[in-house]
Image (tube, rainbow, N blue to C red; front, side, top):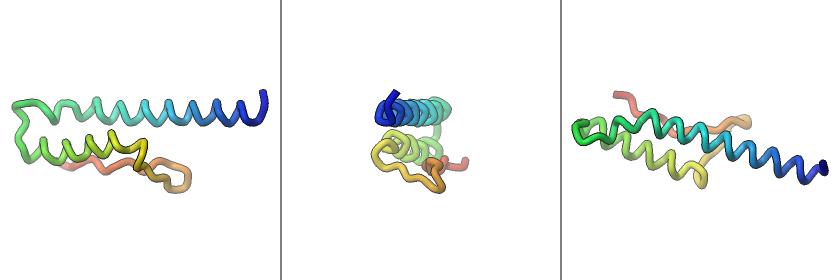
Length: 74
């Protein structure tokens, strides 16, 4: 395997891991968007969930680690 192939494989693995983590965060907050959820919970979580969806474009890293949006505290 060439260095370029190894780098491409590592990048693909990183993206897959990123998506898996992001999707888990979205799934764990699905309940916040139900029709019976009060606005004081639904609205901040809607913003958080949009930030997660935008994360592939707007993410940042700190010491090589992904800096995820902060989950609202309820």
